Amino acid sequence: MRRLFPEPADEVDPLETYGDVAGPWLRVGMVLSADGSVTDEEGWSDGLGGEADMRVFRTLRALADAILVGAATVRTGRLGPARLRPALRRHREARGRRGPAPIVVVTRTAALDWSLPLFTEAETPTIVVTSRAAAASAPDPVRVVAVRENADGLDLAEAVARLRDEHGLPHLLCEGGPALTTSLLRAGLVDELCLNVAPTLIGGPCHTRLLNDLTGRVDLTLREVCTDEGVLFLRYRLA
Image 1 (cartoon, one colour):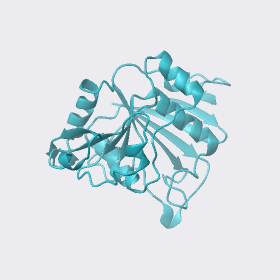
Image 2 (cartoon, one colour):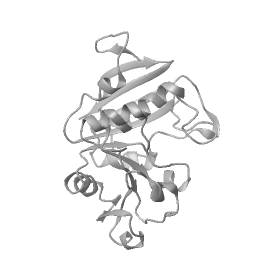
Image 3 (spheres, helix red, strand yellow):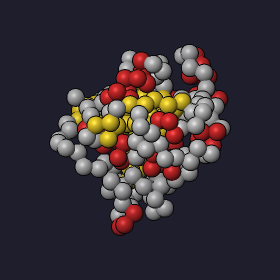
């Protein structure tokens, strides 16, 4: 990976580059095409960024204490438990984290297929954030964080606070989809937006926007720009 901004460097380690934050942090990490689609022709993100994007994807997961995903992503059945390559496992263990970060499924209704490997085979047990009304529908031994509902759905500020205070998960990574990402932005909970821009155009009916509708403008400050295998890695800080 080569850094272009702020201080150019011919070779940088993604673990060091993205590991420069401390304390409670909520980072959104997503890949998208050059025309702004977060899905490829098959409706998934797999075919966008190639191996360069996957290296950063794995790095962000290894640095996080928990990985937030929306219920729609889980219902596709394609999201399995988080796994770690040996070098990334050693990196986490050196920092006191055993095993991969847990997946945290955010769902108002908890209408999920509990037989999925995400719930039955995860090395680090999956956590479900849901409404208080739906919490009882989650079977044992699924870990549940039941939160209030508000006008936008779940009270994500309460969810984030409880994941940090009660579960010891200060550094959160959101991998989407668009509905969850938008809700976190609207709630003012996002500290950093990491966008991996793939050198491809999708267009047509396959185009899936990065976000749903925001209630207002959100200004960003560019922190860093890197590139690897034609993919542009952009890091933005939110006010």
